[in-house]
Image (tube, rainbow, N blue to C red; front, side, top):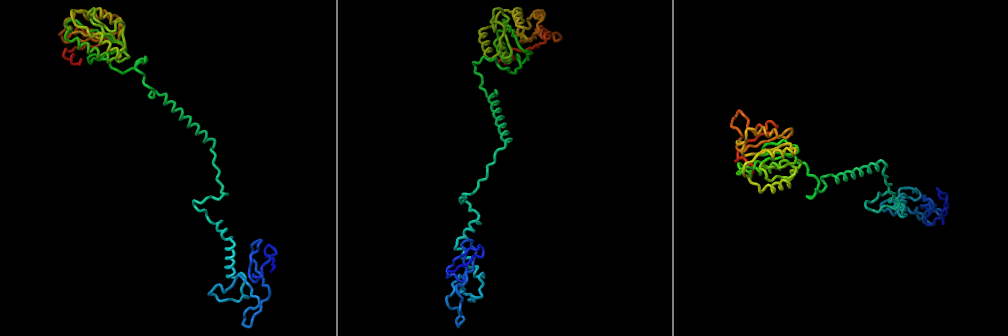
Length: 347
C-alpha cells in the first residue's frame, strides 16, 4: 500500500500499489492526487521499462492511432490525464448529478417536493368595501323592481277599487261636450219621435261611453211617467252602468205630447256641468221656449247643448231659433241634424 497526503485537505490517503504512477481522487475532499511510483523504474537494453510496470490510468496504447509517448515525459495533467479524469467523474455519478441540477424542469413532470408555492394575495380592505356596496345596490334594485306596479298582478274584476281615469272626449252625435263631472240627457219621447227614438237612445248610450268612468250621468225623458236612469241622483259612466241604463230604458216608446218643464227642473237639481236637450219637434216649440228654459236654469252654471232633429224653431236666417238661443246664452252648442244622419250615427 502507498500512503500519500492530500495536497488540499492534508488528509492521509492509503492507495493500492496498483495505482502507482497514476492519479486518484481524495476520498475526503475529492481533489485529484498524483500517486507516486512504488519504486524506481529501470530500463532494459532496448530502452523499455523493466521491473514492476507502473499501473496507471493513462495508457497511450489504449488511444489507438497515437504513438506512445515516454512515460517519464508525460505530465500528470496532460490531455490524456484530463480525458481519463472525465471518465472517472462520469463513473462516480457526480456528472449526472450536476446535469440534473442544471437541467430545466420538464413540462408535465411532477414538481420537486421542496418547490415553494407563491403566497396568495389577500383582498385589500377597500376592495372588500366596494364589493359589499355593489351587492347592497343590486339588492335594492331587485327590491324596487319587485315593488314596481308593472310587476304586480292586475286587480281582479271583483276588486272594489275605484276605476282608473281614462282620457275621453265627451260628445253627442260628434258634438263635443264641455263637462268635467256630470252630464244629464233630456230626450223628447213624444209622438214626433216615434220613428227616431231608438236612434236617439243609441246615440245617447254612445255618448255615455265617451264620458269615461271618471264622469257621472243621468238620462231623463220629457214625458211624465217615462223611465229614467238612475232613479235617484247620478251614477258613474262605467261599462256596467251603461249596460244597466240600456236595460232600464229598453221598453220605453214614443207617444203623445210632451213638455220639458219637469224634466229640466230635475236635471238642474243634479248640478250638472252640461245638459243635453234632444227633440224632434223643434219647429213646433212655443215662442217662449228659450225664455222658459233660461228661467228654470236660474243661477246654475250648466251649459245647455241643444239638438234639433230635422230643423229649428225658425226658418228665418237672420234670427236664432229657440234651441240655438238657449245654447248661445248658456255657453253650449246647437246641432241641427237630419233623421237620416241620426240613424246613420246610431249604427
